[in-house]
Amino acid sequence: MDIKTYKPNLTDIVAMQQLVKTEVEKGIILLRTSDEMATTIRSYTAIEVDGVLAGFCALHIHSVNLAEIRSLVVSDKFRGLGLGKRLVKECLDEGKHLHVKEVLSLTYQKDFFEKLGFNVISKESIPEHKIWADCIRCKHFPVCDEVALLYKLEN
Image 1 (tube, rainbow, N blue to C red):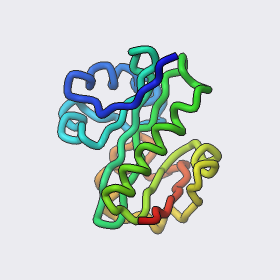
Image 2: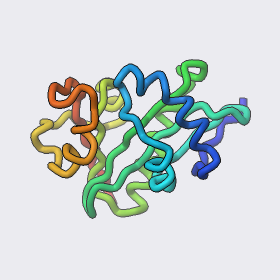
Image 3: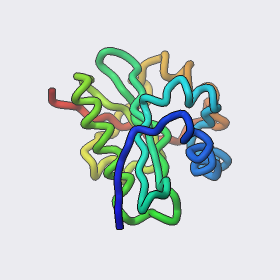
Image 4: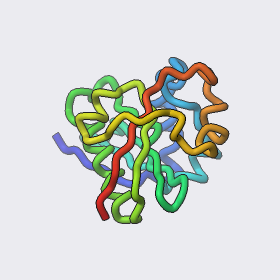
């Protein structure tokens, strides 16, 4: 089995949207339009298994000190192979390279992120610009049951 991570390009957007479609419909992941994905394509990391797109996530920079791992998805077909963990680690490495101090995750997968070293924080401590840029667009807003977690990077 050949597994590799890579930085996707604009021609990957359609496949990425197809992969995340079910999670978006369930309200687990926020919808990102093609244009939105195009303007942030550099923030994404994708993973493929034997040449097939198996998952992706993004490291979104909010400020000099804070980034966020978002849109993490792994195809049902490829779950259980540690691909999600590998994607998160790639994003953390990228954050470290950029000298970000903290990485946020808003998720329903609390245990997954805790195993990777993230710690639960109060949602009230999340920067206001995150709430108004993303959360307000979610179908669950303002009654959010996601868990906020933070990872402190050592640079």
